[in-house]
Length: 402
Image (cartoon, rainbow, N blue to C red; front, side, top):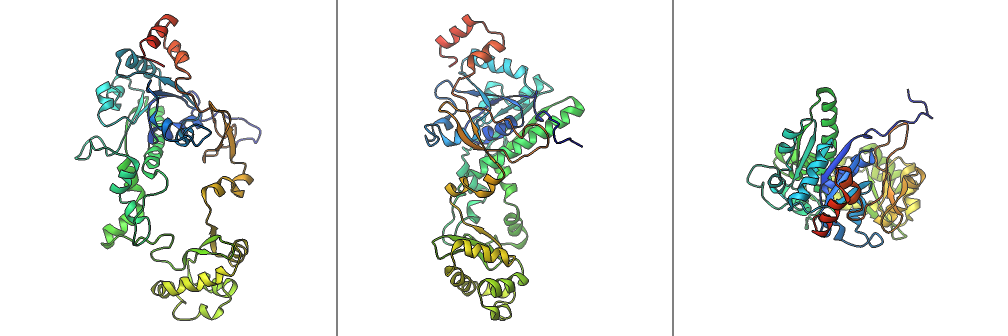
């Protein structure tokens, strides 16, 4: 048992990760490793670095994607098309535990930085290839951006309203691949601890998001028809939707069984007769009369303020939530009460950031390091692999490093 005052190291302290990465899928995966204590060396292009640096300027001049995915890393800027730049990466990999890349399909293999090649040279290395569609098959060479994979994986087909499919508002395919890459690295490191060998790990965005399609996919495969798009409603449960309130808010509620419907009718709607009305008494009846069911619930909640509606629903034991916009999430009382916010350093000063969701007993919860400027650690890393100041100056002069 861990004593409350005993401090433990973060689980990945002593692990070094080298990442030739860009955009979201690989950077978000390696950020999880950095948060857990790993040293993450981010290899970027000399001409602008990770292109996600230029997506926007929302984070006080920095790109919101980049700030989200890249804290706690060391940045080295290299021209991998120059043999001298590629040699630096190979030197870094020789001392690393993990290598991660998400270059365009085939680019890593041409550079000799694919997982199979690196693991053959370094048997203890865990090397991860992240791609859009995998290394084989007819889609292997197809361009893969998040929205495209959302379409190919069917997520867009089940998201939206009956009239209009929509993509998810977050990069779901990138995030899915990132989290499987993260867990794949952890699993491979555990195996290395017992066998002494690392090995390649392959992750594709399509495989990852197809797995996340879960019940709609199984519904379609086994029932023959995919679930209908229902916006915020539920395809087979009613009432289950967001309803407007008197002060302009919206409250989502979910009635999971007929006992809850009775409580909703009696304690919130003030219509006890609806509890036993055959048109509404069972979920099947409510779904069959969904439009009228929603009208009855909407009318009741429209007379209540948002806080009042939530209080009544909570008191009746009905699952409910306030429909918040993103700015409201940043001020969420539950996140504040649980002290989930921290500040991380960056080239533009401190930036607010959430603690990672994995909470471990003992020691610090996470290492939330600075968001690096492009090439911030180039000189130090080049010296660490044995280069002299004269050699570094020559590389800078020739544009091989930045």
